[in-house]
Image (cartoon, rainbow, N blue to C red; front, top):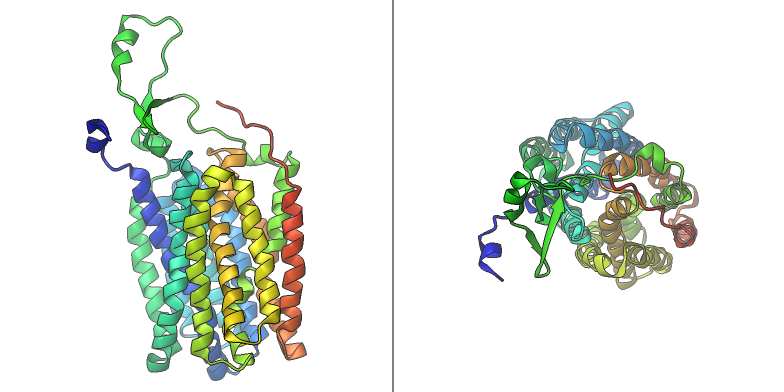
Length: 438
């Protein structure tokens, strides 16, 4: 390490990554604690599983659908405004949900208001991190996305410990207040792209474009310093930094629509285990605390997946990383179907968690690799919106099948089919043509 690298200030992209980590920690930690609140809600409110799970499905559909809008706003207005407004909406929605007494209130406060706020988390955070990194994109997104994994790991057992002592309503009210305050503060540090601070992705220094016939002034400026990449001089010229296909251009490629279809099928089963695994564990004869531990196992292995497969994909390729992730998705649902004991249940949770964490890290990275940085928010938002709106009904379908059949067996068996189909579709997805350089 030379003296220039020692004196170089911390690249602001890592601050953006840390802020994204905190936003995702809080939002996904509270979101996927919903299954821990579910038994207490069912006991007090006396509603059917499908009714409460239906509110979660509406919530998932709305926040997924609005991610297209929030992703586009992140590209144009910046993540600071988008995330701050989202923090207000999500915090107020959760606080209002803690006071519900009628079914319509659950659907309005949680399914609509909180969902609008949640739409400003995943896509705006990850799309912003994509703009700050190129060579280290998998590493940065893995670290940022691990925020959601850490939230899933720590929040459900914390909620499970607090609810018996304070009740689900005060605990949920406190969750909303924390999100309201923290997200509005953190949003101030989210900067849209390195170019706004005179930087380039990965902390490389920008070298001004030089004329084909340099004059005395150009030669004088030729002494500007350059960055280093793996010990080699490296600089980026300041033309053609933010490049990529627009959303309308991406629509022309079969790879875009194959990705969209893959994510639609995949997301049919992604929210369902978070909502139903505690109740599923109780059906198997285990305690709510043991069921909540399954959610923590998901969070733990989601953390492992995001911080391992994200950086690994920088070396082996994004598609190869996603194939590993999707394979574990299939394995997880096979284990859920076979679960009759805690070790098998937790093994399924571990496989599902690794899939979930690695997918969260690789999704936006794949979009950036395929379609470029310039419109990554709008493109990722569109893909997430379309797939999430249709896949949002998974938790309600799981709840309905459980109410009708008295078991989750049929629901998890369907998960094997859909996850395997998503894997096959992704195998046949080609990379689009290279995007324009300027």
